[in-house]
Amino acid sequence: MENKIRLDLSPKLNSFLESMSTQNSELQKVKLTRHEEIAPGVFIIGFSRRHDFIPGQTVKLGIDEIQPPRIYSICSGTKDDELCVLYNIKDDGFLTPRLAKLKVGDTLYASAPGGTFFGTEDPAWWIATGTGIAPFRAMIRSGMGQNKKLVHGVRHLNQFYFSKELAKGLGPHYHRCCSAETTDGVHPGRVTAFLENRNDLFKDWKYYICGQAQMAVETRDLLIEKGIPFENIVTEIYF
Ligand SMILES: Cc1cc2nc3c(=O)[nH]c(=O)nc-3n(C[C@H](O)[C@H](O)[C@H](O)COP(=O)(O)OP(=O)(O)OC[C@H]3O[C@@H](n4cnc5c(N)ncnc54)[C@H](O)[C@@H]3O)c2cc1C
Image 1 (spheres, helix red, strand yellow):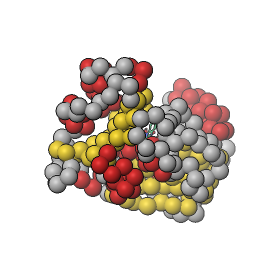
Image 2 (cartoon, protein in one colour; image 1 turned 180 degrees about the horizontal axis):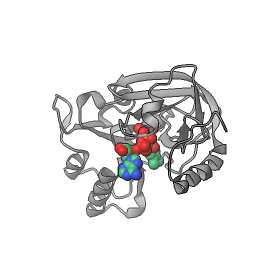
Image 3 (cartoon, rainbow, N blue to C red; image 1 turned 180 degrees about the vertical axis):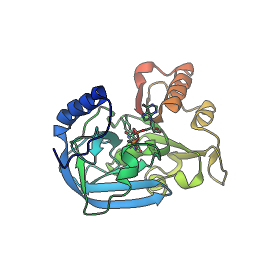
Image 4 (spheres, rainbow, N blue to C red; image 1 turned 135 degrees about the vertical axis):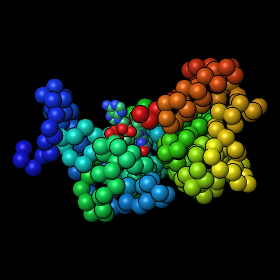
């Protein structure tokens, strides 16, 4: 126990962390093979892939076996040798400021893939904000781009992660929205404003939404108002 981080917390919280450490037995040590800052405060971190996964799934990452891990969407393809995730630093968060200090060759703790946000071959709209683009990049890299339309919403123009790859994979079906800056080829405003004006929100298509809670809820409500059946809407909320 000596080498494990102990925090000066209430007995109740320490007991909670102890119970989480038991759950963390699912975490395995991995060595980082990639750690790249692709935009200010936004990183791709990766390690050798040990498991098969379904595009859209997540892994849990931690910096040791004690602290509760956090969940991240896999952004790699199913045939890639590395398993990567895309994350942004939360300055006041626990894990991400520590993750950002790791270097290639350092140890990280990772779970096997899990989660039920599964990409399929069905026709679908993919709707993402910010780092919520990650599972859709995994789906594109895994050959699921047929019959798909993607809209990615961000605040700043330098946050269109993987844009070249997504544009190549989806052509005119890749749409970008930016709420704080404007440029040619990018829709001004939020994804909800973009979707509000579409006449191709087909009722028998699937709608995959990934990102922060408020966007996910507003988008879901808008789709339901437009007559999309609830069961055709699949949501992954980053909280
Ligand atoms: C299914 C799923 C998939 C996800 N995929 C991704 C992904 O691909 N990429 C990505 O970047 N993120 C993803 N996330 C979010 C990720 O799991 C982490 O929540 C995020 O990286 C922040 O972790 P952290 O430890 O740095 O911050 P945390 O310590 O978890 O804190 C996060 C925020 O909450 C605030 N906070 C913490 N505790 C409290 C409290 N008690 N009261 C009020 N506020 C508090 C902090 O100040 C901070 O702003 C996903 C989440 C889920 C559920």
